[in-house]
Length: 298
Figure 1 (spheres, helix red, strand yellow):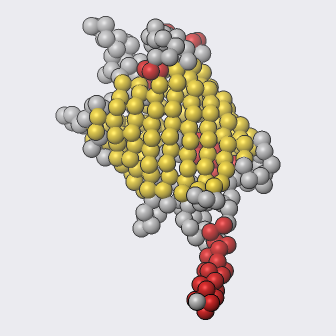
Figure 2: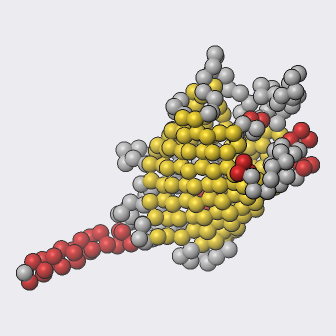
Figure 3: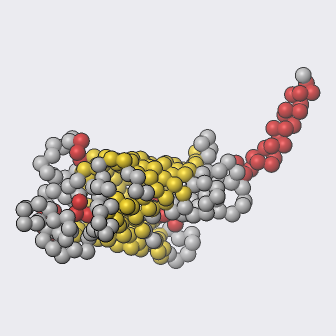
């Protein structure tokens, strides 16, 4: 019995010496990685949506980021992004209708100590959202012109990002809270009263890391989960203050298989208003599948 105990203890110590430090290494989260978490992911969906979204061949979000900073350990950093969202409809000739153009500039400031276990980052964003059309907002029947109707708004967003590491789950966690404001003079007059100009965003993200981190260079998370909510705070469509229609929410699971380098698979449930520019009056309940280039590395 004592011999078995000694062997077991020796094996445990041996395994710890081999793997222990790899498992306990805390990933290094610099300001660039924090900003990358806050930028929307680039993805392409499969034509297998489940729900009330119009039949699509795919939806794609292209979101390259260009970082502006003095040096790698700077507390202050800017990010330029030329975000474009495209839907190809499963119709004759497979048309791409009114893409969303959302160019933006974001500024991030690390408010906590650089080597702190839990980090607090403040950020601000200025953005433009339009669909590249110049037709009348309404068609001849008085309905919103989804084909060529002009949609345009400008907005700013202010918020915070808090990050931490869970040893128990071996996961990196992020929490975001921010307010998005579209001043009335910054949006089309036709949008007043029916397009929300004051929004409260919250998000929680967790990246499950490989059990062996070590010093093998950058590591890709095994999988991640993201929960996001948006609540419309202003007077819109004469909705009551606590009308559930004010809520938009999504839950996304992302898996990165070992045999792929920079892309992985995701499944997402989305409930709320349609975020695709002039389609904002549509309400969606949809489950989507696709591939995503979540390039965050630890």
